[in-house]
Length: 304
Image (cartoon, rainbow, N blue to C red):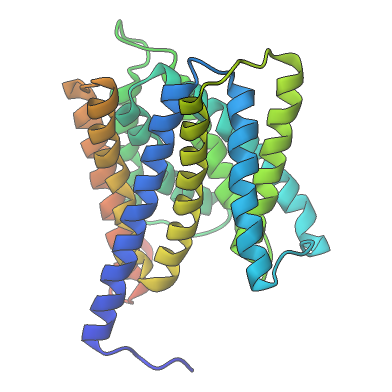
């Protein structure tokens, strides 16, 4: 049985976990900015192939050093195949979104994912009380403010971000079905190889654009950013308590605002900012409520 941590040790671990989570989200935002910068010059499948190969090489090295570079358990193969399909869809749709929309808009829409996973839990038989249903609806309306369906300001390109977010949701739900003993980095490696293969096939039917030195540098930096995102996210979730570290996912919106303005001169409008605030507030409340219920402070039924 694990020993209970002293309050000071618990706070220190939570703070370290929060720092790792913020670093992971910085990796996400940096990757988005780099891809948004290079995709107008080179093909999407070309970028996917190069980025995936470089990132997969880094992950393979990490796995080899741990002695974990081996085939996955046979029972995981169907789930890993479905997860890879979802990742392919998410990658293509998400890259389309960041080339067409502001970085902060894409980041805000994607941050409804934790609420979507709560909704998925209902489908899987988990109980969700009215307070968390209210949080889900609030996050949904926040997305509607950003997407603006049916209005004169509606941008159909926002549907790429919504579709990518839904694919990410499928990926996360399927991940829960894999064997807990399967190393996270092994799953990441398999996914990167599958996505890279998609980039290779796509490159056969799309023109290969000539690349300058800065293109290669940006692709290399993007692969590093992806590796940082994956690794820092794993460390964050294993270091601190979920209820403490998970809300720091929302720092990606701050990073996206800063990079979007500094690199592309993007300034989100008021409706986007209000929608992002609603999504963050709903997500923070959902995390807080989950932690409270998990600690046994909530009541059964409607109290949840």
